[in-house]
Image (cartoon, rainbow, N blue to C red; front, side, top):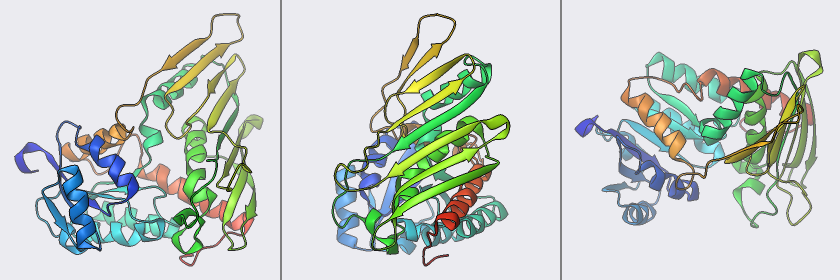
Length: 332
């Protein structure tokens, strides 16, 4: 680490990278030193807009920069595997945007490569780093709402731009990989690995899932009911909310299940409801940025909040869900 700071590179100046980088630059001990695009002009423009010293017109130039410790990758879904592999093969740690990869096979190969070479690797699942989600998990663990009986979570943005990559099957488009990863991560964080599941999907003429419902089953009849959609217009009717029900109370997350900043704890003993609200810092990416920076600075190869085994288990589950509903990608 040069100058005692973790040196970051940005691979692909995407829209989400434009929101992540300002938050990363506010993290103590982090420094963004370079950005790369397949188009040199695009990389240069991004560097100028975000005050980054170096820009490259190829990803190979970025990963060959000896000063870089870790690379943030935000290319399209279908390129995650190849770009992460490129960075790892050149000795760089990686923070890889969601979905981690297209399928479990790709994810397992990346994890094996990172572990073999003792390199940092983490899925950029910001939901799992949000303070209030961590607090909710502690509330549940303490038994404040008794034994959990049911989790419900949904995410369905109202409409998408025409031509948006989430509508393109060749770019890993679809509701599950674009939005469904968030309700799944929410349920997994609270309940862990399910024993079984059932899934249903609606498909576009191009063969991608534009709406999906999933029920996860656990022991003692506990369930997680999840829904996600990228249907255009007002068809989806879904909110971005979550609900955790227990034998002694419940937790209501009224909005933003992907980045929860507010929840209310209700108890059935007649006590007053408790509302916790913590506005996000910046664009909301500082929590995962801090987690990754601290891990790299400490010489760790993975995150405690987003462990690789969890990422692999969720990729395996999504593969099984896709198999059940008949959703396949070329990478399969």
